[in-house]
Each structure stands twice: as structure tokens, then as C-alpha cells.
Length: 243
Image 1 (tube, one colour):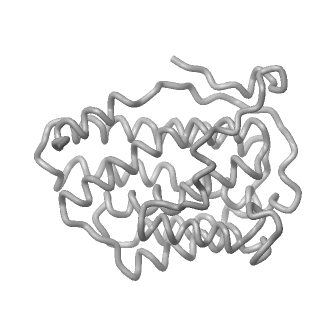
Image 2 (tube, rainbow, N blue to C red):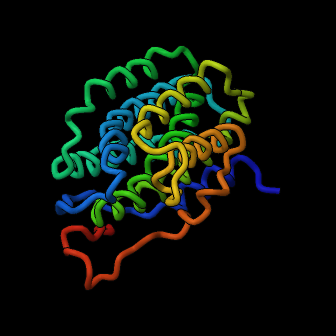
């Protein structure tokens, strides 16, 4: 059986370095424009999540090697994700939604819960809905960014979920309600059901619900495989840079 030390250090070893860069403008999926822009306005949750993790490193954590190291690396990731999504927002105008996004951010900041628990709920049941929205409804450049961010977030949620298990931290009605309200706001312009599941409000809300309660969403299984355009179809500026 894998022990805590091996688990946390192995998660850190799984990371692949990449560099956030600008992307080119492009067309959003017809019918999904509003959802993408709302989701992109919630990029302002990236830094608070990093701050939650920073707060956690100063407090109650499992007393095993590798925990703080991987959390500090995760904080660096959140800074990079914020930079990448700000590049996206520079070519996809989501400014009309930023005031409402700030209200949502404030609600998460003010919720009095262990910072790692809040991080896990946001990353697992909010970010893992927003990122597939970017990948299925967004531009070529945004899809590429989302794929890279998703790889980081898989590790973040694995680490955060393990810490919550080790510390006996569990979700509750208030956390679930804020999770649900956040995702519902993003997808409110979509139809309840649609012939195209990625344009269905119900699809994204159910995905978030399943991620919150079980950590899995069978309906998002396809997103494990990257939707990568061929290199000859892609402007060089939209390709990730590995370091």
C-alpha cells in the first residue's frame, strides 16, 4: 500500500513544467459564448485558491514529508493559471461579468472553512467544470490553455482530497450550496437540455454535483483525452511552451 510520504512526493514528481503565454483571438462555440465568458470571469478565483493553500501551509497539515513541498508548488501553479487566463481575457472580453464574479469571489473568501477544504471544493467541482467548458466551447488557444491547467489541477485535487481525508475534513450544506450557485451562474444562459450536451445547463450542473459528492463525473470522461488541434491548424502563439 502507498504511504502518505510516497503519495505526496510522487504527486510532485508527476508535474510537467509549462509556460503561460498569450493566445490569438478566435471564435467561441455558437450558443456557448456567454458560458465561456462567465467562466473566464471566474479566473479571479485562482489567486484566492493559492492564498487558501498558503494559509494552510502555516497551519494544520498531515505530519508527513512532501506535503508542504507539493502545496508550495501548487501555489506557483495557481499564479501561472491566473496569468494564462488573463492572457485569454485580453482577447475574449468578459468584462461585463466581472462585477458579478467579484460577488462570487467574496462569498468564497468569507466562508469560514478549513482553507484546504475550500480549495478542494473549488478545484474539484468548480474548476473541473470551467475547464471542460473552455475546452469544448472555447477558442483554439483557450482549449490549449485549459488542457495544460487541467493537468495541474488533477494533481492539486488528488493532494487536497488526500489531505482532507487525513485531517477528517468533510463538505457540508453551505459549501455545497455555494458550489452549486457558482456553477449555476456560469451556465444559466444555456438550455436545460440540449441535443448538444456541451450546450446543456443540466449536463454541467450534474457534472459539478457528481464531482462534489463522488470526485468523479462519468459524463466528463472524454475530457481525460486532450482535444488538441493539429500543429498545422494552430497559430504558433497558441502552442504551449515547455520548460
